[in-house]
Length: 402
Image (cartoon, rainbow, N blue to C red; front, side, top):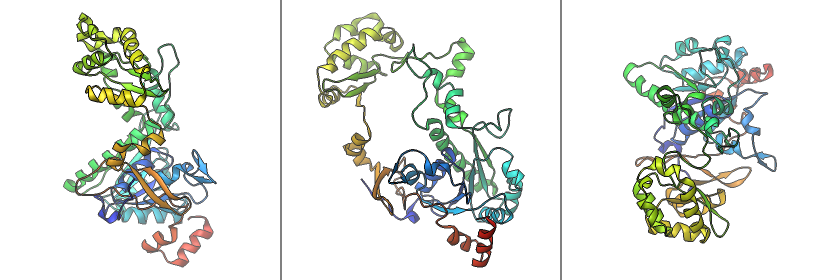
């Protein structure tokens, strides 16, 4: 476990990001930028905070998901549909590099806060717009949740057992992938700004990044009129590839994407004769004999404990991984060596563990300065920095603008 350092040491120190999005894809993109040292200001409606604050499990009434998703963000409130809130947003635009929003297309424009108005105040501004289906097209005004993207991208159709229903993930997979795509797109736009001197609009449709991750399914359909089938934990490209129960009731996953690995596995489990079968030389052909290969591998694994299986596979230079839950991850020496899990002091929970930044840079540490802040905790401070007087802030509070 590690404790993050001063955000000023981050690679993106000096970059200001306004997170005006809700739930997951947009706010998670802002989180990734904040992890690398960007200053992130979270803007929420005064009476309707980000629903992520109440999503998932809680401890003694304290939401745990928000502690991670809201980390490194200063929290302010502003009703963008009211004159005072609109002026707060415009002043933020003047002094920021990036705004991330996920309102339905046309909403910012209805408030006279579209890119024309924002870029008039700051031509270098990058506006990242994250919606289910993008800013154009017949579905652009549909509510856009990650579940819909998982369904429409082809992910659910290809996931699950062959004789079972299409299967959705038990977490925000499409949102998470879209958050990474959005963070990448923002950095591309900022790089272009260095050449052109001007910002631009990033349009992320949550359905597209997960579609891109699913491999050549579109090309397969175009060229072969073939749809990827559901195969459970198996693969149509190689075998053995599955999850297997160990003798002590634990689970491991085995992969044999490389021919040499497949041969090592069969020697390890005591079935070297299968290597001489004509079909064994091709991953796709091995996949057609998955029942036989699974029986051979599964029977051997069932006679050993999980630790024994992992040790034997490692000694044979074959590919295996234990199937972990959170408790396993926290105690694993590889995650400890990587510094994957950070311990952060939270004012409500005390010392709190969470996943850290998703990569390392040789010249800069990832940053978690603090966990998710209370709704509107930094409103007075940030508005003061924007030039609003205490009297003006008080008046906006009376009007419900902040």
